[in-house]
View 1 (tube, rainbow, N blue to C red):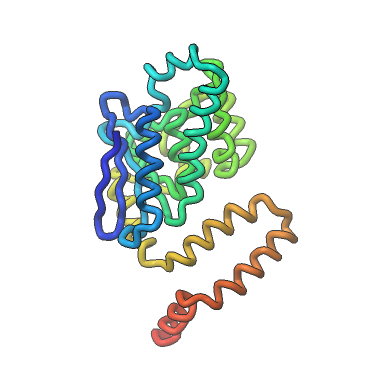
View 2 (view 1 turned 60 degrees about the vertical axis):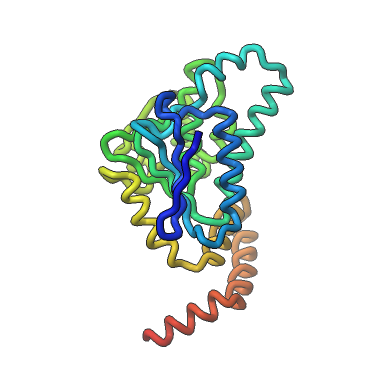
Length: 249
């Protein structure tokens, strides 16, 4: 249900269910988690891109599977929810940069999948974003955690309560999307090519820092960052990077 390839130290994961608009299925979620586990310590891959096959990025939950939820027990529902949450947390906390190249519709869980990536690149003409859960009496509960961090409480309320679908221009204007381009994957590859030359240790520490400080008071955040600054100055990446920088000057 997914495809994988590498291009110059950039891994590309493609959701590969075009006939189902790349809808999320338990098997797809399992395959994504397994692939991410494999890539976590793969030194040959420095940046990851997630995109969709065909005209959609990810249309949310698989409709056939969704219909079966009516017969799920409480424990089965919890297990299903936890599996999706594990995937989103895996992406959000991944030690390397992950870019979502949104080539088409990203709806409900598909929109959530994009939101947990570090950077979102959207197709200028075809990308669409929306959290439609409220329209069927469902909750965008797990994805809301990441949406609020991405755009803030006010815009999160707008998107989650209305269930409206927005285009790439609107998504860019509200800060949900980072870049728009007429070829999302090509733009994502260009961005990844620049990021891959950066210090992997600095990237990991920066990602951890951003995730940590948002939940701290200003005073605690500054104290935490003082510690990070102190540690970062002792790393080989910093020593080598500073030496090269001074030589160029």
